[in-house]
Amino acid sequence: MIHILRSSSSLAKVLVLPFVVLIVMLSLLIGGLSYLAGSQAVVSVAEQMLNQTADRIALTVQRHVDGATEVLESALPRDLPVADKVNDDLQMLRARFWSATSMHPGLSNYVFYGNRHGDFVGLFRRAADDGELRVKLGSQPYRSAYRVQRIRGPLGMASNEETPFDPRQRPWYQAAANADREAWSDIYINYWDKDLVTTRSRLVLSPEGRFEGVIAADVSLRALNDFVAGLHVSPRGVAYVMETNGNLVAASDGDSVRVDPAGEISRLRVEDSDNALVRSTFATLQHYLAQEQLDGGATRTFTYTGPDNETVYAAYSWVRDNAGLSWVTVVAVPRGDILESLDKNVRWTLLISAATVAAALLVGLSVVRWVVRDVQRLSRAAAKIGRGQMNVALKIERRDEIGQLAHSFMEMQAELSTDKLTGVTSRAALLRYLDAAVNKRGRRANELFSQFTLLFIDLNRFKAINDNLGHDYGDLTLIEVGQRLRSIVREDDIVARFGGDEFVLVFWGIAQEEFAAKVRAKIEKVLAPPLQCLQDVEGAQGMTVGASIGVAFYPRDGKDVESLLKLADQGMYEDKAAGRKSER
Image (cartoon, rainbow, N blue to C red):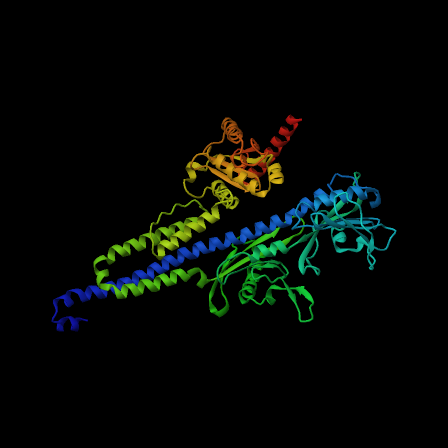
């Protein structure tokens, strides 16, 4: 270059060429640093997103299967005595089973009971007004099936099964009979619907504690598979739910069973999936599951080299309950899907730098500072979210690729922390805030988290609105209640939807009975006016919702999130019970 400068007859070349070379070198250096910083930021956000997605799937699965407990309790409450012979309680059992199968029709449409004498009664619901009552008395070798149209409608003509049936020999009966708690059966295939089904069962005891029989409910996994199949993780990403033995429960590619050329249906194992990413993730996951079993490690995100030697980012979460359920939810995304926009941004930056080097000579330094500043802000914001701070303010007003990245970042942040229906804080974000508070992490920890008041709210009369007016008006009610509750809190305080018609309010920096009493009064006052969303509904004008409220104070009532929520939830139920007594 020195020779060129010496032989140059143009002073402009002598003055400009060194700076052009310097700017090109700086552009390459800044581009590399920007790519490195941006990739770290995006990977940090992606890992957080994967972890949240795995937890979200696990939570949805847990809620899905938990409905079976409600069905069992509705079908046959634990304290309800049952006659020694099924025939003596047949009408009562039929009515209760009809009501139980109405609770979650997409989840459990078959409830049945077998006793120690070999008696059996079960109700299978085909539709809202169509069912089949299946009965077998101990003295008979076969079951009889009767078509029923209503909860107390007449029985149709009986049809007898050809195969002998004894409930005491069925896996669901033996699983519960040999356990001291509720139990799950192995997942099996419903050959009528080609659908995966599992059965939850529990013991039925007499008032004296004598074993009488087993109550059980089938749980369809079709809705679960539809939920996972509807997830858009990324263009090539996958999500699936599996048993610890490697059998698939649900998968984003929709395949959880396999049909051979002869038409035979069988369970699909993860390692036999047609998706190479599913197979490779499972192979790597085995090491982490074994490691977790050995040392109890809490790291549930991992990176490995997947198909075509491409880096894959993955996360997993557990689904467990006290009935022996042990499933794993897994999410995996190839590196190219995560960094595609960033890679494209770097290529365009280098191309534009080469084409506009003369202009970059005048404005390059300011542009570089502008780029690096926002990338660093994005990286810092991603790091904060990685540490559990969901309410990170990120104001980047740009229209280029980095602005799009920031916009996507803020959308992901909002999605992770906001309840989609009501717009208030989500349950997952609430739990992270509380965890950060009790463990003294996050922004303004010493100022805000030394003490706080937590109120657990359950709406009264919401079920009547939901049942009588429909789910759409129920959703509008939840939205309006969320807006009203937000009007009584401070800027830093939290209004979160915990689930269904349950809300949680958190007031930072104060934990006093007098304050809680004032807030309770405010809640009752703000919920007292008639619901605006129902003013145009015939017969619903003037309808209101009340609230049952439980309170817990940190650190007085507990120093962990689970204890505080449990205590507040218990207080809410006591308040609800007291309200019912006062209405009598």
